[in-house]
Length: 182
Image (cartoon, rainbow, N blue to C red):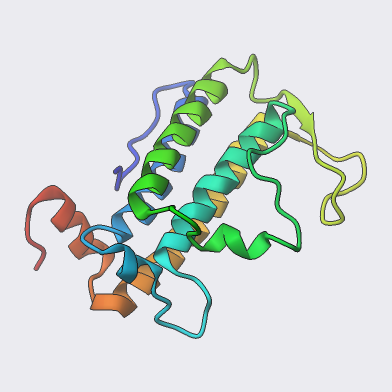
C-alpha cells in the first residue's frame, strides 16, 4: 500500500497516474486494518458512510469507469432502486471478499491503461443527465478522475477510522509496516 509516490521516470505518465491511483487505494485499504466486518460497517458520524461501504463503492466506481472506457457496461448497473447498495455490503459480501474483488479490478485497470494506444484516446460518456450530451473524455481523464474519486474517499476513510478507534493514518501506516509511531 503505497504511501509515497516517487517521481515518475521521464516520459512514464501512465506509470505515474497508476501509482497515484494505487496510493489512494492504499489509503482506503489501510483504514480497514485490524477491524472486524462489524466495525468496518459501523457509521460513527451523522453520515451514512462506513469503511466497508467506501471500500465497495471505490471498487465499483473504478470498475465502472474502466468498463465505460472499454465501451462495455459496468458489472453492476446502478439506478435509484439500488444506488444505496453501492455503499453497503449486502448478502454474503465481506470486507475480505470486497478487498479481493478490488484487487482484481485494480489489476484490470492497470492492464487496460497500459494497453491503450494513447492516453489521448477518448470514449463516449453514457447518456446520463449529469454528463454533457455527446460528451467524450480521454483515458488520461479517466485516470485523473479515479485519482480524484479515490482521494476523496480515502479522506473520508481517514476520518471514519479515527472516529472508530482514534487511529490516524500515520498509526495505520506504522501498523501496516510493523513499526511504531510516536
